[in-house]
Image (cartoon, rainbow, N blue to C red; front, side):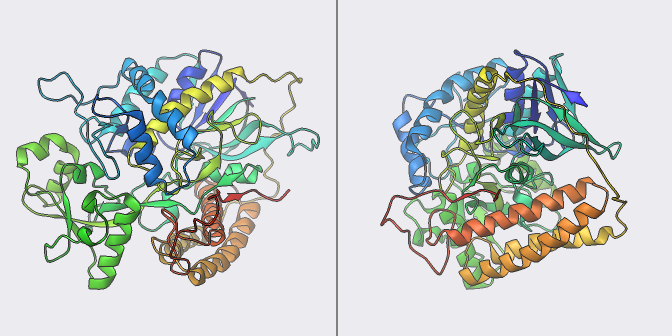
Length: 528
C-alpha cells in the first residue's frame, strides 16, 4: 500500500507542473509508464502559442482558435486560457525554460503555424517539448516531496462506488502495475490527476510515441467519468514518409517559414483547397493531401522549402535538418516526402476550466482532457499552452479540495486464478488488427458503412480482450491492449453519433456542417 496526498499519472508538461505545485501542499507520487522523460511533451517540435508581441492580441488569438475549432470551442474557456498564458510562460521561464530569441534583438523569435494570423509561437529551435521536459524534470527531481515511479502502469481507478458505496462516489486511489516486479500495487490518495497524453497508437500511422495508448481516457471511462468529442482525432499533415524513419514529424513550423506542399510533379496543390494555401488549418491540409494521393495514386506528397538557404534551415530546424540529413535528404536542396498521420486527440475526459471531472477527487489536464479549448480541431501549438494554464488551475483546485470523512480501507489487488499468458501472439495480433482497422475505416475521410464495420469488429475484439484480461496475469502489453480497444470503440461510437462533417470529423454521408442548431459535444458515459 502506497499513500500520498496527491497522485499524478503521467510525466509530461501537465503532470510535472501540477506535481511541482502540488508538492507545496504535501507528498506527491508521479506514476509513469516508462522512463520519466517518455511523454508526448518530449516529442513536441513546434512550440507554445501565446500572445507575446505588440502586433498580436488576445482577441486575435481567440479568433484564430475559434475559427480552427469549427464552432465547437467554448469561447469563455478559450479567452481565459489565452489571457492567462503570458503569466504561465513567465513561470515556466523562471523554472529554467529558455526560448529561442532573435539575433541581437533581445526579443523572442516567434514562429507562425497553420491557422495563426500572427507570429505567436514561442519555441526552442525545433525541440521545444524536449527542452520543456528537461527543465521541469530538473525541478521535480530536486523536490523531496515528489517521488517518481518509473515503469509503472496505471491499471484502474479505485472509487467508493467500486467498494460498494451507493450514496456518494469519489476517486480514492489507483491500481498500478509495477513492470519491474510484475505485481499490481495499490496507491491511495484523495486527489488524483490524469495527465496521460493521447491515443495516437490506436492508429497504424501516428506521430506519437509508443506510450500513447489512451490509458487515461480508458480508465476514466471504466470509472464512470464522462468522455467528450472522441470523434475529433487530428491527423498531422506532414509526417515524414521514409522506410527507415518511424513516426518522425515534420513540424508545422516548417510551413510557417514558407514551405509549400507540392505533388510528385513539383506543382503546388493547396491553392485549390483553401485561401491560406499551405498554411490552412490542419484538418483541411490533411484532407487535401489525402485527396491528392487518392487522385494520383501517389504514396506521398512533398514539402518544399528549398527557397531558404541551408544556413537558415540548419539554425531554425536543427533536429529536423540533422535527422533528414542522416536519411539522405537535404531539405535545403530537395523536397521532403510527407504523409498525414494520427497526431492529437481533441476530445477526452470531460473537465471544467479547473481540470475537474464529474468524479470528485479526479482531475484531468493536457491531451487526455476535453476542456472546450480545441473544439472540433486544435489550433497548432495551443496544446502546450492549455497544459500550462490548466495544470496551474487544477493544482489550485486540488489544493482546495478537502475530504472530511474518515480514511477508507483500500482493497488490495486480487489476481484470483489468473495465470501467465501462454499465447502472447493473440495480444500482438489484436493490437495490430485494431490499429489497421482504425486506419482503414476511421481515418481522415469516413463513411457510415465503414464506421459500422469497425464497430462490429471492435465489439468482437473487445470481448476477446476482456476474456484474455480476466483469465491471465496482468502485463503492460495486456493493459495497453485493453485500453486500446476501448478507446478505439469510443472514437467509433462518437463518430457514428455525429451525423455531420465538422472540423476533424469528415464523413461522405454527411459532407456538410449542420448549423441548423447550436452545436453540441458528443458525450459518452459508461452505463451504471
